[in-house]
Amino acid sequence: MVVLYSGFHERTKDDFQAFTKGLTGDDSIVILLQGGNGYEKYLGNYYDPIEYNCKSKIIVIAPDNGKTYIDDSKIDIIKSASAVFIGGGDTELYRELYCTTKIADAIRGLYSKGKTIAGLSAGSIILNNEVYDNATGKMNRGIGLVNNVFVFPHFEEESYAYEMITFLRNNPSKIGYGLENNSYLSFDIENLMQINGNGTVYEGKYSDEEVRIRILS
Image (tube, rainbow, N blue to C red):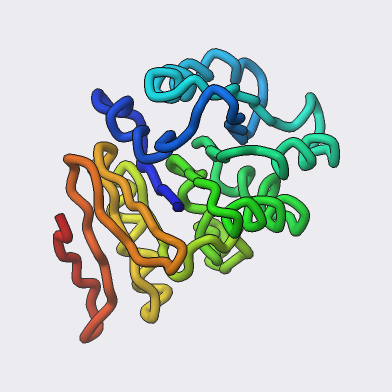
């Protein structure tokens, strides 16, 4: 299963049940983060809801100080994981770190074996086959676990709604999904989407020379 989370909220522990389902104390969860100075202070945001739902070992992977890549030894750890969770932060940095051929192949390999892969915010964005760069307007390669699922997290904030509208104007053949923080999407192996959580999910399309947004849940 693939799970695309928007952001942390008051019921995150409940929503993380979708990610931890079936995991036991014999399993290992790899959390992929962007790193940087002081990133450790945010680890509790990930640890708390995971540990609430399961007893699996948690391994955090982030670039070493000053590096802009992930060492091969850490990629081997990803390959042996029971589940992978990609965190939030700078989307372009996450794309540069984790959409490389070696890491994308490792994550897709896990998924093909039935492992659950999840992302939150930036992490959910890069799980698509393409990642839109707001700065350049170009499409870049994503990890590719879902196709044509361009998510816009934190949709209750006006700036993210504006980003989706701008994206759809520039890419009229695409579909955008606006996720409030207390909503998330899940996909089975056949890429069928299910809407979850208590928040609202919006679908945006470009039609008749304007962007049309409708509520899905």
